[in-house]
Amino acid sequence: MAVEIERKFLVCSQLWRADVFDEIPMRQGYFESAPGATVRVRIEGERAVLTIKGPTVGLSRAEFEYEIPMADAREMLDTFCQGRQVEKVRYLVKHGEHTWEVDVFEGANAGLVMAEVELDRDDEAVATPEWIGEEVSHDRRYRNGYLARHPWAER
Amino acid sequence: MAVEIERKFLVCSQLWRADVFDEIPMRQGYFESAPGATVRVRIEGERAVLTIKGPTVGLSRAEFEYEIPMADAREMLDTFCQGRQVEKVRYLVKHGEHTWEVDVFEGANAGLVMAEVELDRDDEAVATPEWIGEEVSHDRRYRNGYLARHPWAER
Image 1 (cartoon, rainbow over the protein chains, first blue to last red):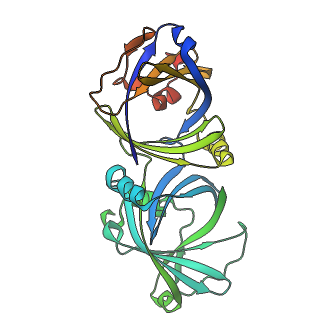
Image 2 (image 1 turned 60 degrees about the vertical axis):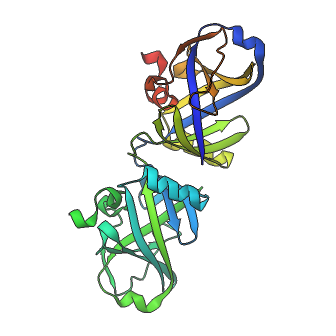
Image 3 (image 1 turned 45 degrees about the vertical axis):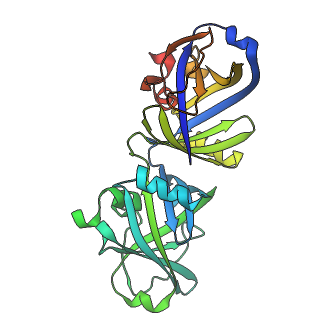
């Protein structure tokens, strides 16, 4: 992490052009209010990742993931994401062709257990194990981002 | 970029525990509504970066920056940041001890020219060049994130 200290001014003439020594075109965008897009920082075991997810279309969602230093992830969680966090243990479970991810939530979401399976196609057939309950793929209340702000314990 | 396709279910018994082959503790947080925190994707010349900035305290702001693939940056800007973008050309200008960044805005912010200088300390003395106008360090309307949503042309 860097700390940026800067002062900012309006410019009132063209005189600065005489001392230019470099020129960089820039284009930049902001996520805060992007509808359906989420930015997540996650510590998973020994690894830390920053993930940008796009809006969900059907069962699909564009996802960009970047590994980041663990110290950065800890600092972001502690300073920027207070009150918007999820803690859970993910168990990987083999069933037939598929690997299921079973998330056992902790803290304010303790009591909630969810299973996810990743598919190659939207219409791929899945043999659901006998321990599977109601499908909540399209229920946004079961999104982790939602659970981070509206914990299970408060429902 | 990856596309994630998944189905999600509630779990209704403990039977899955028999087939667990891995276990990963996780902690994750979300930025969307973090007060004062911004997430920015920027193409600067030939380079693309993802930047997380914390809330401003005085003149300081914690900043985490990660270089990302150019194709990812283009796709994020085109798909997630429509209507929340800033385009500008940054000129680097030498004046005395300091390098000034002069940003000449384009598109919906055309007409706005701003200069920034980065400091090592909050109270560092700066010799302001003669082309410098009003200081706007503490005016949030001149933040790029604000300009992305409330362009200069619409004021």
